[in-house]
Image (cartoon, rainbow, N blue to C red; front, side):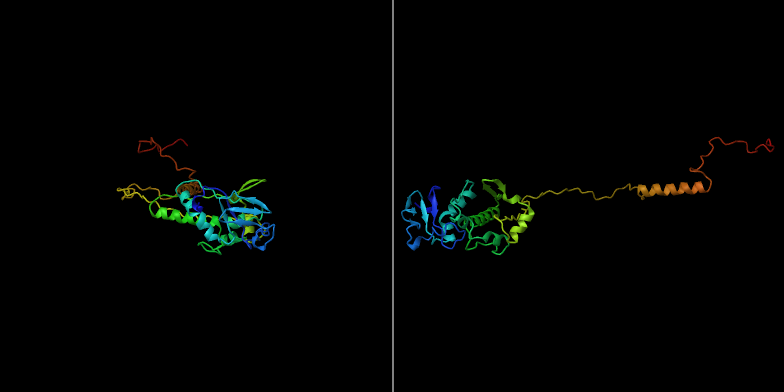
Length: 267
């Protein structure tokens, strides 16, 4: 059975010495001859721990296999299935210090270094399955887009624990700063860069009749309404000060038609 067609069965990886994380370091010292050390066979795919024999694995990975070789043995077929629309799960299960983080992400602190830009945007030698798979997925999506295929890649990060589930991307800004500064934290922030995709089908028929002529009837009153109102009030005040009242007098609609007024008005 090859690594690519194991049917999703269990794979046991013997934690490499020096991988960090504590816990399983001692049990991984399989070459010391200690009777309590881990003994395994990659050909028979079995493991013995503390004299207890386990033969359930479909594969046993030697601690001599590096991160690149592990990825090449198990992940390319799964990444292609993921791009083709198949649900793919890669799960690391084990006790504290058994090498889960080393296998999935890499040695301690590598994700913080990657988030700070210290490792660039290429595959780092120490990367585990997750960052390698993510970079492979992004490359596959870029290839699809170049071929004219509309493809969208989304991501989420959720912490599952006995205390409850937590959205890792919704942490507070202060926690992000603490992690970026290298202070004690049990999580690594994930930075997503979104690049807008230009519209592949712009409107080929723009409006053929834009309005070429200005308004033939411009506003006859160029002054703003507030300015015009202020001018009217000033004119009215000037008339009041001249004794003409607030408004100009209306003309008499029926003036005296006699051109010779009474020369002797009643005194």
